[in-house]
Length: 394
Image (cartoon, rainbow, N blue to C red):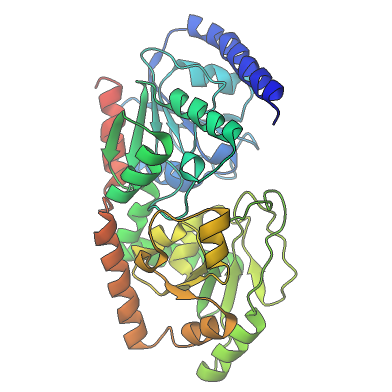
């Protein structure tokens, strides 16, 4: 982006903020909570689990507005009114809600309002690959953009939820230079992993929806790479070998589910993969997975809470670490087994159901959660609801 375009972009955003501020003529509704989750893609992520908790446990008079790109969900939810994402109503309710719950960065064209609170429950846990201002860059324009964004997010109305000490240190304080209020809640979507009954129910739901039998289920969920936003991920794992090796050793052919990052196209021509990129609930997929195969994705944080085998296929580790993204902490502190080639990955997955391998995976995950100073205790929804009611003044 040229300097002229960058300045024009800043002016445009300030102008839009000015126009949207006209909604401030309407009073704030102290009973209203506005949900802005995953850019309106689906009823999913932490917002879904929080609302389910509210329906079951909260008796307050709080009302909820949720914006979806499709306008309405397939299944209505009690106490929630769904509207069209970024419609005039969406901007109106965003402006008058007492509390705004958001799963991602703030829109820098949305004005802040005195008396309103913006709670960021974020869309990832742990602290793994570097993002935003923490990525080393010699590009002065990018640095200025990050500085502008960080100055915007450091508003008194903003409150961050955190999953761990490391997330607070790196993803909040280092990336955003955030100095405001941080709540040690854990992620609402991860409460599910503290109930064996809920895990089993979610796994059964996935298997029924995908018509899976009793064979083991492996989930492949890579992160995105620079240059692949809106494109197809380059799958460089030999899944035919992985499946055939496992089948030869155990006499059963496993199912391999492929979940692309939401920035990318989920299409795949690999016949041994079942594409679940459009399945709305990642936590349910994790519950169904007997092991997880990924690379640098933060889904390893969520999966570690179940202590199941996790494998990091990272043949590009040196390049990724030194040239593309960079890591907050060394990968040997992560909860997965590092595999740098197909032979190593196939061997590790083939042996993953052995008692000693599963015990090692559980110990590795527990050590990782301790090292990172996890706040996950299965009470994130309860803690978030207490915060919402506090901010409402109840």
